[in-house]
Length: 145
Image (cartoon, rainbow, N blue to C red; front, side, top):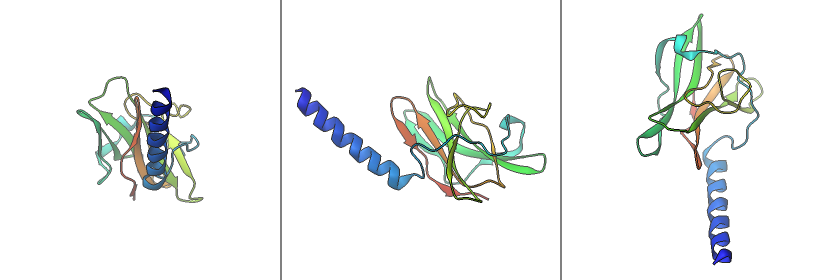
């Protein structure tokens, strides 16, 4: 029985890993929020980044929002209708094309419990919301700004 469980778990893990690598820009990106906005709720003109919303189970969903603050545009990941889940923003840097993950609004943790810090438009050109509870899920990746 244990052997059967392990083979099913390995097959599921392998299939999941293949999906993440092909469907998302990062599964373990380094932590960096660029020149971040610590409190995105202070931004104005807040709206969803089109094409980034994803249902991650039940009524819980994630998406990337955008807004302006101090003359700059910022993007951040936000989770809606959640319990003890976590959210992060995966983004691609404009200058070096490296993939990063931005988490808590302090800029030093990989995940947030509600919404992440905001990454500025001068740094990020692709954005994606990332979710974790008992599994990791990704929203769609889009070119932003």
